[in-house]
Picture 1 (cartoon, rainbow, N blue to C red):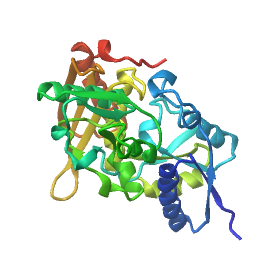
Picture 2 (picture 1 turned 180 degrees about the vertical axis):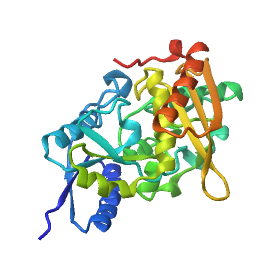
Picture 3 (picture 1 turned 30 degrees about the vertical axis):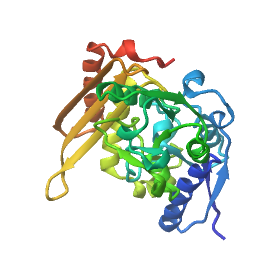
Length: 319
């Protein structure tokens, strides 16, 4: 009997769902069974808010330790949780096609954001979301209170169902992967709130020495998604910001009629949590021919944002 491949995953319902989808794809590609190995990370056990515990790496370190030790053969991460520095002994073998990168609102009485009651309490665990929601509310004469929350999808939606909060903001991709988009009140346009760098994308990681597995996993890779998230993560890295910093970024790769990528647009935002100050810039140009060129695009936009005062708005700096 063919030995099973061991896939390391966090224990949450969402992590198990997205890892299960990758496991099924890997079974089809390799013809080998795939066993899910549940791993508890520091981010799963800590009750502190991400801004307090640093954010960067708290959901992935234990998975990476299991890869290095050989306890699992590969791991699936939400890409937005990955630190921007890649360990030499590990490789991102595949970044599959990205899900919807937008954020969504789940509100009481099915209300869209602009019709929330005066002083509405809106829950989110993300300083990035807080900054942009508060800025939008200020600019449109709305009054909201952003409330820091933690917990899985059920817990967060439960705050609305119980009446403790008027609304919560979540990632569209997570709800899609567990089949709960019907509960969405409003898909928030990226003109209102830019997603976290890499939001909606998954990362499939394995040991750099496992060349046979790398070759198999590479069949899951989507070059357009990889190019987009590379630019976004390069921006994040150049800002020296952790994943709990109030930084949003989104790259769009634009194709011609023959599906050849010809252009990339990269947008970035940094804001103070209360929304009183935002630095929001974008750049558009031909798609760089190399990984290094794509990273350079992110660094260039970050440099422009820093020149406009972005550094002073980031509460969480990389350590």
